[in-house]
Length: 229
Image (cartoon, rainbow, N blue to C red):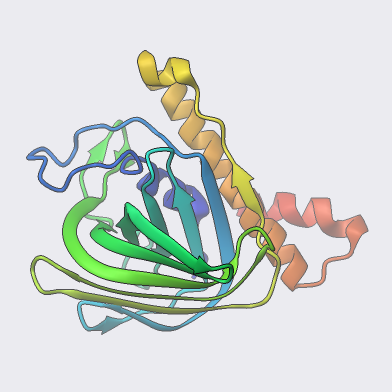
């Protein structure tokens, strides 16, 4: 099943500003606040959600100016093409160059049954504890593996073991407008979310072109067709 990265970006963008799982109204809108993202292609040797096994081929890393970081995983779920989970936390450390650790304090859970705001699905935010470990370095554009283990407040467990296919990672920095923060503009935020989603989709298609050995003369046509699918 082909995963649409537009769905990933839109699903994730609402809660990057540190949405609280204690907020009574889960559909409360939060402003987009992302300053860096990276997408990694490979395979998941383990992906469990509440004891149910899934398959995945991509993981995205997001970071916000406030310090929150997240690993987002689109699930290849034959029953739900909107099924996405995110391991998210604010405390991280890097004791050596090729090891990054993120303490998990919440899981973001998105499915086809979630409510929508302005036509966009809103993930459920669940208090959780756990840890993600990334072997590799974004600065070197290489990540070999990502492992995550978390348990939510209801006792549900989430496990991820992801291995990269070895393709270079493209890390993208995103400027956050001060005017957007001081004077929220829903139309501008929606346009920014769509632009980010399209950018991620293009990144995924570039990874596919690299993995399939597409020749330089055919690369542009391949990427355009990929983004239209």
